[in-house]
Length: 110
Image (tube, one colour):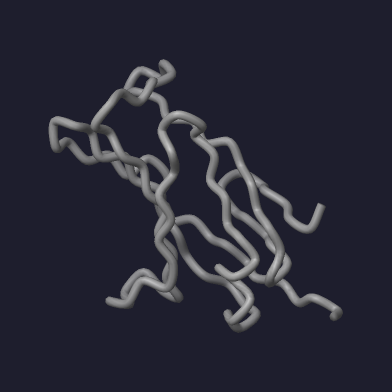
């Protein structure tokens, strides 16, 4: 495996595939089951203050799996980036349930 997750920090070898099961909890800590019309999105930037987003991935609500493909990171410089994951409910309510998190893009040998 060419990645590691510690809390909300992801370490990923540049150009490798990353797959993780995502879960959402309500304010009481109970599992939230997304329903039709909800959307979940992963967004990554170099810094939180940057206007430009480097990568945005939709997370399917039927699988709840975040998948980063090799082409998503193969051209990124090695280093630490920031990301968050946001749920937008069909009602329009927005909940950024993973915030101020880091993703480290590590070197590959070949």
